[in-house]
Image 1 (cartoon, helix red, strand yellow):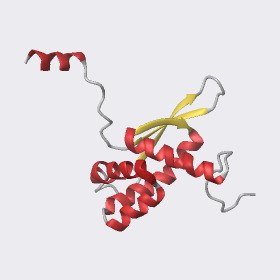
Image 2 (image 1 turned 90 degrees about the vertical axis):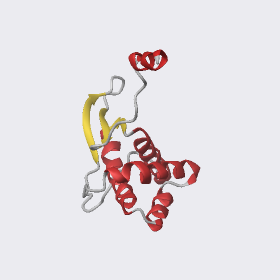
Image 3 (image 1 turned 30 degrees about the vertical axis):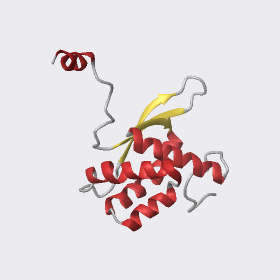
Image 4 (image 1 turned 30 degrees about the horizontal axis):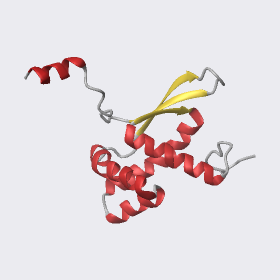
Length: 139
């Protein structure tokens, strides 16, 4: 029995699982919403929410804690986005920064798929519509 054993192994070794969660977290922070399997989504929630809580603190120590979790040059870019864009929008929220929406099943292997998104956050800017670009060219 797995009493008091937290987390999911996701059929991966520890280093692969760690890299997977780092990549999923980075993608979620950059794109504000991602589509993945249910198990990965539930595990990602426990990985990302402490990072956002650190970012809300805004201190140098908190930034270093996040950089320890998301290392490298790409991690620095993601950390900047997290501290400058996302954390100020969640300043009043005490927790629960992510939402998991079940989408159904993948067609090839019937794996349950979910959409993970940051709650109450404006989505990444979409491509400009034709009417907006036409208005700018006319002016």
